[in-house]
Length: 215
Image 1: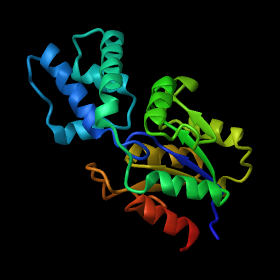
Image 2: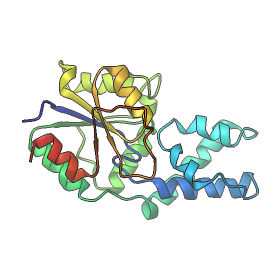
Image 3: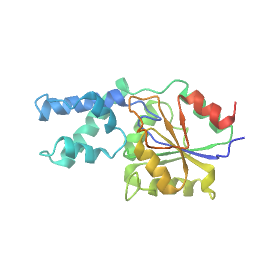
Image 4: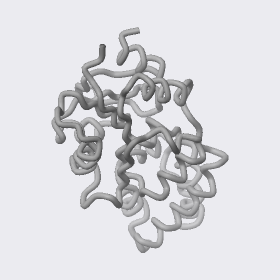
């Protein structure tokens, strides 16, 4: 039987495969503001995770940050229906985990309304018991605030029963700051640094199911 009762998930790269969305949105912005001078795709992959405002400030230092953020969000919303997808067996595993009695939550650096929009497109709108977006907290990840808000909502009194599931170093730092275990996925294009040590890694949603249920 699993030691965990509370499973908190990251969004992009963990629940939603948005890599193609990010690439296409950034390329449209590069065409408009940088005359088609693209940052390599291998680097764009790592834009998933940190707050997008900071990334866009670095990529477009001469453009008003509020303007470029809104433009990026608008482009992403247009692209999501055709570019975003679930991971293999994801929905089946999430629903099975709920049926097993796990409490599921989502803690992301994505804005709340955009997160809800994406979950609706992926038909996951009823899967998570609590959803904490970037605009729900004073500080986004790696600050622990989002995780603590989610655990408080779930009435989780024992931190050892909580697991955060993400796909990058920031997610591990967030879990560490909150004092909970962390599982990192390794199915995406982002290579995990060799010097980090999550509680465990997972190869797929089926692998997550096996490790949580010992099946």
